[in-house]
Image (cartoon, rainbow, N blue to C red):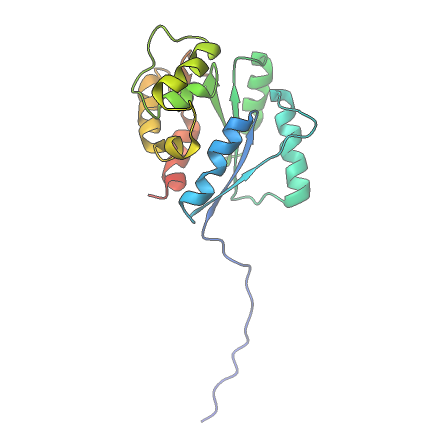
Length: 197
């Protein structure tokens, strides 16, 4: 008995990994997030490159627009803006936040005053009261880990950092963190996928 000829229809390719597009202001942040590509095949991290040193908050949207035009951003991709508060006017940060509220897959993660706050929470439950400024936070890292920064060591402790940062944030509903806090939107929505567990 002859088999029925079934018409084959090729569907759109299915991607079983989660893509995170990171638009960060600093090189250290780029290195940190890029490392997650090595930890699990469930996560694909793309770093939006800086063009002409444009790292200010007001340029981050422009940078993601160029990335979209060049590589494309799919509706299911997660776009995260990662920035500090120690350099940029609060109005620029607020404008970026307002833009992110218009797309469910776009978010903003803010360290106050700098990214090193987030790094501290990988190793500490709380940051000592005597450490307040960005310079002090950066100077303290070598006391916690030889060399002061090792992306492999830090990235593998992301779940610990998520818990510690969330516990430190007394105003979880507000997008702008208090001093010595890392706003936890990125943490709460992305840690499971990024850690691959």
